[in-house]
Image (cartoon, rainbow, N blue to C red; front, side, top):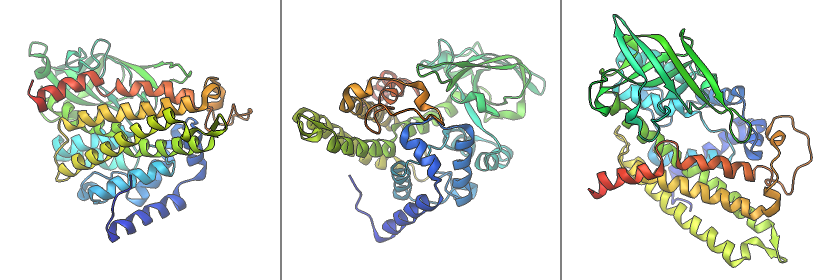
Length: 398
């Protein structure tokens, strides 16, 4: 599934590989490879390394701090990042809010927030989903009432990933309750240290509190923190979601995971033969490989089409569907490969400093945890069922 590269692109890939070899701390890559949880300090450390190299915001224009890479170069970097077991860049500031501010924010907002996203001064989280307003996001009820130079915000957000670490949250709020659902929504930037904000953890199956509920009680937010125009937030939200859905596709991560799956199938045996020679298992792997190659090509086309500063359209929904299905298929087959060794779930094994004996061959311990955790992929960012409705309306015309 490798690309045919020009000499310049080959040289770029070699440079990227050297960067990961020289600058990626082995301690971090080892944690990613073993499926251990990354701390906030771990994520901040890798963020700082990328920023120092000028490689953090690969899709931002150069004038705002991007590296000026081509579409192929961006794809190569993502692929090599996954292969090197580099930590995933926390996406909320860099990949979501940044493009919105660049396109719709005021010059003052861009001058203030974009450098702080790059240098790590501000850690952002996303305030979209609410109880009763997840994939049906236009049903959100968190309100923002204008009071002089401030909005007064009341309501609740949920499934706020890494909100416990955040300094700021970008929020969709309802500013006109009488307007049609999508027409009365605004996009606000809210300081998480504001009085009236409460963050409550949601404990997941593996005992981790990766996501949170965020409550707003009479939170005062300066009107200057409104992005774009009042009641036009749905436009900005859709723009952000196309970037989020394209990112969720995770082509590079899927390619790296598939390479690990192939190595597993070559190493483990069943009936005295490598698992890769089992006809049914080999057929399942082939189906994944074909789908992954097709998705990589589609992803390249979509990104290339918007290289001039636009946003992915309904194609991002296609990528989100196929990308999440492929990633789930890979983890499911990896779990199947380990058989009974994937069944034991030892939460302590995911914690830093765990010194217990591994369960089964290397890689088996996190197989079940990865499988269960990745069930969320087809739900968040707009469920795959909703993405199919978007495709049927915007592409097929139904």
